[in-house]
Length: 145
Image (cartoon, rainbow, N blue to C red):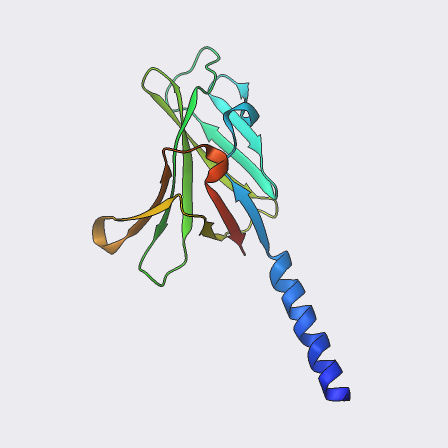
């Protein structure tokens, strides 16, 4: 009986540790992205922050217009997914890539969630997981550290 209780306690603590190392996230909605200075954007995540910087010289404020896509990559079918960015349209031909930074600043992988993510073959055997033609809130993933 004592062994059963000890085993249950260990299993529960291990489950708790694995659950705390994962956080649910999604691409930020357009309304949640703020421009902190010309060309510099940020948004809060559940367990981190999204940041993006427009390339080139930006002299005026340019609000985010719409969501385009999110992308993760894998080096193979069994490899972990790495979040690349969520891309937004700024206006004209400008595109903004927002990148996620975990609160603890540690490297992480992700596990995509839902049916909106579509696998595509990339160069050199890479696998792209793309979430597009939907709202950014539907591009859900779990941060794994």
